[in-house]
Image (cartoon, rainbow, N blue to C red; front, top):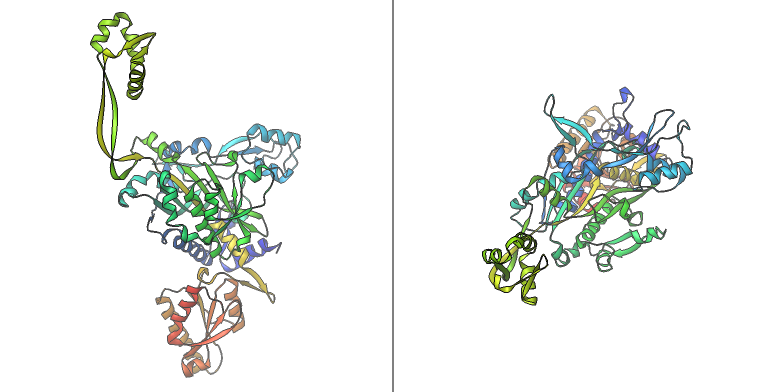
Length: 578
């Protein structure tokens, strides 16, 4: 399987999965086109994600926000300051490289997240040079990965193409919260295109400049998370997570510990209970793509490797025969960072009003100062004392007067005769809080690659893509047998086309093929992963039955035409391959 990447690239172009964009102009690194089959496979992945992450819960909703954002959004989010990668330039040939990747390839040292000075030190000490021409490298510098654009003609407003979906959902939080009847927890999900101006994209679909993300922002009250998540843990009760912890990585160990979702919470491995819950959901999702449990893990990022907004991050990784462990998703505990930043920059209230089950009596301590009497007593020193008094809170003044009987102000002791102390009681029905956020984010193209790699099989010198049936780009192929008299042939074609129409009207994706031998048609269907092939033959004209051939086993069963749709539907629902 060492050459599976090259074989997949050939198959992908031949059968319409994907290929390099702008090939007639020599191609453009980091951009790929998706053909008729690839588009359907991407859609199947997205539908499976929606089914697993969104439609399964009553607290989840879906939105769609613009690709282009005004500059202020990414000022508020911190991306203008932090969304950078270190680059080096070859002083001889001018090629540009991402510095930490180049160092790792040349020396095996992982310097991701290290400072510019540390990366430069390694380059000098290890004599890292340009892999193309052997030239010396420039000192690293940070490059902004945001694609710039202008909003409006001529001298328009500066904008950026979004590098993630998150900010659109943060900006819309209060609107969606109102639509969701002001209830937490609340998950906002989105699938859409993003753009990152990667330094030197390589590795095909694994590092693109434009790609599709499936992301959700899960807003919750951190003080209620332990209690609230308990209700939903049965959904992931059977899930075990393979976790490489930051603690073990710091000791130089990358062997995962295997724990249940509940254990990851109770043992403190995952800081936020909802983060652990969504990792369990992600485990189910990746397994539904046909990835074996022992080939996936959650890799905790070290503090210097985390994004600026994250208190804890795990990469969900899948083992690739070609690339080793590759990240297919990131799980971040973003705390209340984003909502607070957008409140600061926009001035708009992003609070959630947490209503108490029962009103709570609150006692407020107030201190009233007799400023006229105090001014008469202190004279020239009144302003000095006033400044000190105004710098203390009502609670501080109350406590100092209650315990000491005076307040110290500018070296003076001001007695209680200048103050009136009161306790005001009121009923409070709730409080304003800024919700915390947990974010799972998946790259569709990376999932598509690992799905193809794990599905790729060669059986008797023929390629068979053993995709999970319900994820296949087409659900069923229909073939009329090309034999017999002209009248029989015509009748078989007519019956086959009526079957195709009936299946399509029922919502199935169907391929009709009458060219070549039946063996060649089976082979073409196998190459794009179609799980079921229906053949109309001579017997079909006599008793109204057809054969269903199963892609992986090549077994065949015979069913009546009237039962065909329900039978295929059941096979797809159960992911059956007899």
